Length: 167
Image 1 (cartoon, rainbow, N blue to C red):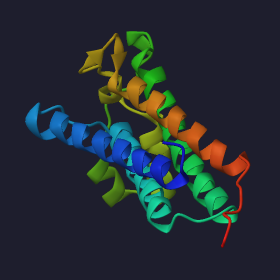
Image 2: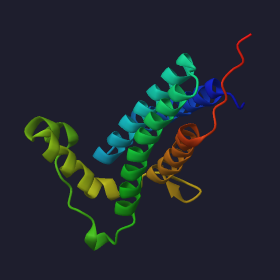
Image 3: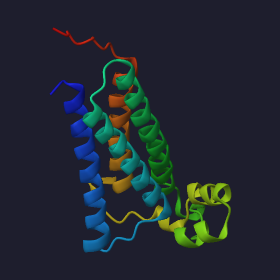
């Protein structure tokens, strides 16, 4: 499938699948997400929304670049968060940040800029690896997915878009 609409529909379905899998892990397997996991979910959701709107709109040239940029932005932020999470998971045990308060407590009791800073620093619970597949943790797989989304966004931003022939 090489059409813009098809690629963006697949991107949306991939994001939806990621969120459903995250829900399965949380509500069926009872793996509680850490604050960095929640931020990654937010960025998957954001990228999914941009993919869906782009697929529905199916724009030409400039619109494709705009949607590509929005996907690239959401996926780039998500990749940075995922990379930070993987880094924390691979720290030596004596360098892991101490466990902090939960995300709800942080958001309710600190200004947004300070709350975001605290969450991005990670905590001890972010270092826990609760599940792996092919020796990669959930944040590592999420990082790979974000990189693929970034590549899709880059292709739309910098790719050549033909004008359709209007007959």
